[in-house]
Length: 506
Image (cartoon, helix red, strand yellow):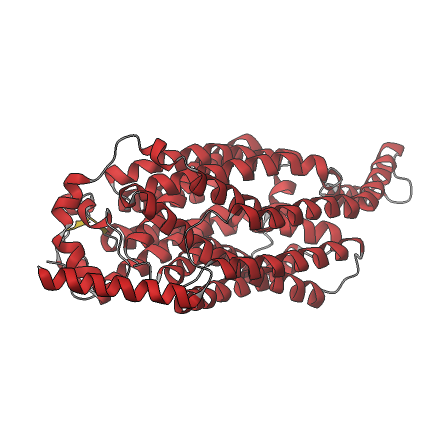
């Protein structure tokens, strides 16, 4: 029988077999379903906390390993490239399940975080980051697939809003912890990896014993509302026998899957720039300390987290997705433009930047949570038994787009490579006294030139992000879903009548 309360998984016994076979024979009751959703969201937060920790201390990492900005960016490029194929591999979750990918992924990332401070050089550091990228690519598919399985379509945007708290709150925790602990830990980048590594292993233990998933016959059906539960269970055996798993990639390689996946991937360029480079940008362009930059970043992620949940709930209440995507895009475009204008004003206050990026964050969240709901609903229309496959295609496209963007960025913003060397060079000038050597003075001259060029180069990149946000509006149109709340409500009522007829007939 399905567990009747959130603590039921623990009561089933800790057998070795149970740590691998996690399928539920019946659709869980409300309490248990919320428990599994909560665990899925929690472990997603920790996974992204682990995987984004480098962005919060990037300037310190560059200084420690004497690593150029381009070298650092190339690590991110390679990590996203292998992560793209990790996403494709996770498409097998339709056949093999999702929960084990997530649980044991936490074990891998936790161990990687703890051993990263022992990396003897920048090559080994990069190797650990690339291995983490593979895990991220797999979890990017497995975790939203789990959330989809446990959330009916009426309620899907709220559930996906909570799922998106994974990368968002993960980034928020990176910034918050770095801001609060770095000043007390000698600005040691390695301290952040020790903290996240321990947290990651605790999360692994929680997932190992607390995360379950639906068996194929249950997850291979479309659940519109919680009232469909009895019908879904009655059809489980036949659904498992008749599920069409042939040519999975061919079934999902369709315009209504590919175009929206590309659209959201380019729409999120500004988001991934924030993850990887906001700290570098704020320290090099505005002169903030690493701790202060993380304090500013905290506002970005906090507003994003709250907005995802609120907007998801509104989208579910009105039963529409696309109007929210349009509204969010308009806000994002306007705020990205204002953010771009501040680039050439290095004395912009932290308060001004916080207001701008908070509203930018609001716009991104307003578009993204409803998009995730609409995208999973579009996959379900194609074939609900191939949800992970459809998400794998999205994950692959997303990682490839980010990979290409990160590859191009250091050539667009080439001056940053010299600016990240500035602290070390200026320290040498102070140490040289009144007569620094000519070669050192030449380096100072290059830094001054880079400082003059960098703002304009960053502006060019923000323009790329603005254009990408606008293109998203056209690419999201093939998604399923009504524009009118009234029409969407009528669809839901018609579905409820049909379910009542079928269950009554049975």
